[in-house]
Length: 112
Length: 115
Image (cartoon, rainbow over all chains, first blue to last red):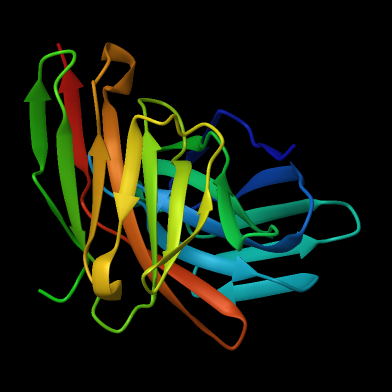
């Protein structure tokens, strides 16, 4: 089967750095994405890793280790508006085509 | 607005009724996904189209659920004989692939309440 694990909640202070980890088990692994979702809103794309290493986009960075089936999202210079749910999502190639499996999400609380 | 749109935004129905939702993807995107999301959970994959072909369907999807994407443009998701457990947010996303990377753009969702 396919499964992802990520912490349910993380709390950090404004200006700090926070890391949200994601471990996965899947066959046909193709890549790992991260999405942000504010309450009442739709998920929005943050980053995608297909190869090992770090991808940086502004204050957000994402890391992947395919051999460890592990990735993380790093948020720097935290702002209050970063309070949201963050989902890791595995893209897997099955016999019929691609499937995207989302984790249960990590709720990030940013405190002043 | 050139983003993904979904209609209706809210639907309240009685158990046993059929409902149909529509998704209009970003025009140049050839892939379209349907997800279901309940409170405190991540989006749960339901099905996926590449152009008009339905390539993957979750085993979680019962026979009461059907999706179509005629002509590879908009898509509809129909739920027959709704049950209270079908109450959820139904999300549609469209995407295209560039340089090996796929970015999914989500619509605002249709919130279904089955009484």
